[in-house]
Image (tube, rainbow, N blue to C red):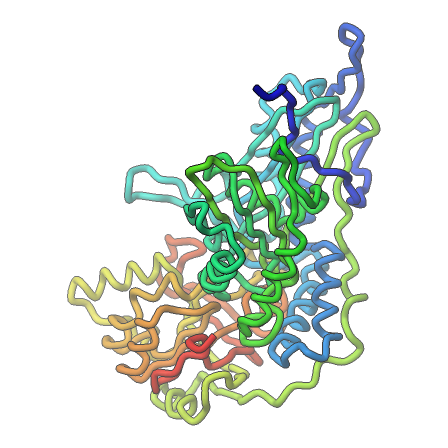
Length: 534
């Protein structure tokens, strides 16, 4: 028989976060039966939530920006790595003006909180935190991405980005701790759970497993990533909750070894090994190179003897995480970097000149121009593109199934998979980066055979079916940098208009004019795929 001893599951040893004071209002202390209780006016939760989601939409941590800067200083970084890193820094300089958010997918609003037992609000905290989300998304140039079901197949955008995901845990003491994050669909979709067994837990098998599963991440979630790998867990949901927190840096200060109580710990040796595996993959920062990841966090957890859940997830180039706390001294929010220009190099990295492509010529001539160049060629696009995402593709597929013609706009122009954030006053467009190409893969062959989608622009790798369709039908897939939505809106997108399905809101079909829009040839008309050999 063993002796009882309680082990705190996640014994975080310290908090090195730099906080700024939001306000001393809304908090006070009262004595209850000899205990100092922190009394929080629920209005303070609204103020905190509103400010947190505002800050995290336009600013990033200085530690993240420093990692981008390090890529530019690394002689081993590829030209593509440096091009992506430089573009992302430029994007953050634009976003820090507070008009164009870092990413057009301003995400699901998520709150993870630990409420001390001696904290009293007298209210439904989730309701007031949700009010802060509502106010931020209503008042700032953010995108509404949440859809709610009315039946199994009928859905509608809520028009306010609610509901939020709010998880409040009990804790000791009289402090209230928070982690606020916005999770876009791209990085959210790149969270994986693999139900493994004890057989995985040796050097050879684990190394092979990681090499194989890293490929599942691909580039559609906008690397370089902050990668989290969690091995073990008392349940699948415990594993995945740890993945999410680890990817945000929330668990950075865990112990680095296990104990008999089963404490979670970081395995620093395997962090180095996994980082090296990612380097050797040569996927790089989206278009080949060394920097598939900024860093790796490997967390080891206890497990049931018959189970070994393994979770993998990322925080993407829009590393939107911010901590906060409420105590008797006031309401505090993590200090993000509001002057990112200090991380910009004096000169842009030297690159081979991009190939200019005029998109306003007939589609036949665009295809004749693109076929001259090999995959990996960097392009500079100018002219007209059509913007369409999942629901618009489904609507057009329905039209084809009913015997109707492919819309002329899909035949005459390249299609850009994207969905913009709200347009700031006086600007032609809101933040407007590419969305994940893979979601449109099922439509490609059908659309190309009908004369549409001959040139597609988006982010991330695609299935073999797209390569086969492009070879059979003479089409191309061009990769745009995932992440720099703000700088694309400011510098490249000159006009935007809704031309079809206006009732779809963010998912409506639009026509845009672009100048100096960067892209790479990823899949060509000869059956070549840039990512196939990665």
